[in-house]
Amino acid sequence: MTLEHTNILSEITELRKHPHILDKQHIEDTYENLGKQVTHSVFFNHTTQPIQLGDDTAAIQQEDGSYLLLAAEGIVTDFLENDPWFAGYSAIMVNISDICSMGGLPVAVTDTLYAKNASDTKLIWEGMLAAANNYGVPIVGGHTCYHNDNKALSVSILGKSTNHLLSSFDAQEGDEVLIITDLNGAYYKEYPFWNASTTSSPKRLQQLAKLPYTIANNQWSNCAKDISMGGIIGTLLMLMNTSKVGINLNLDLLAKPLETSWNKWLVSFPSYGYIMTCKAENTEKIQQLFIDHEIECNRVGNVISERELFIQHENNTLKF
Image 1: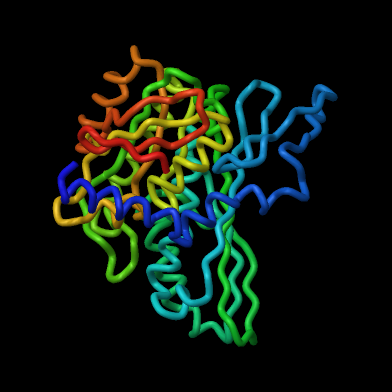
Image 2: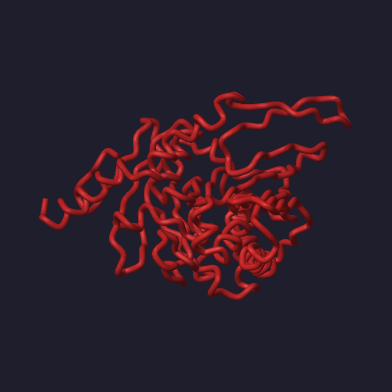
């Protein structure tokens, strides 16, 4: 093993202590009071349907077999104070990504905003409206409350899908693992965020948002998850947890920005990024769909039964 390889593996080992990855490893704790699933009543046919907890959105099945998709995201106060425009933009963008990761289409969003006064929210609103316009998803209402010392923002989103979901519960042993990212961007300021959104055209953003929906409708995949805080590593760990599987990840097959180190890229949050699994016969179909839109779609490994994450670099393997 060369010194360079030793350093790369050492960097990746250090990611075990990264706070965003630690958060993802304990994400089950956030819904332990509800259990692993809840049920909802389908009033028109007097049945109940389960809703599994842990996916990017709640998937609420309808009488015709399609799904309503419901999700929400909150923005921390420091982000709102330090970069209010981008915080507002991000609140819309990340919700849309959650809907798309399920193979759905976003319908509309609502927001809840707390601040001292209306002028204190101007940049936040400008960011939210810019994202809503860019992605073609309207803000249809919500709640605003003034006379608060601290700013707070949460955004909820409604989406829809056909009867074929992309769910993080459905990775199967033997599936190939695809990592999908739009590298037509750059890091946003000092944040661990790869921005290919604010610099893109609304037409392109809306086209890209529909690609997972196309994959779901063609049933080329059963399983996907958007790459969120915690990056590729944190998102893989969450997918492994819900699907109760392990994954082999080969870094030699994964594209990244040339000047970015592996330990930075593997915990970065891309504006357009998904992890998807599929049967081998569908890999080329999915890859070609993304290639046609200038998006990286790398086959980086496979799903295994042993519930561990193995990371390969050249001829070396690290059990994360």
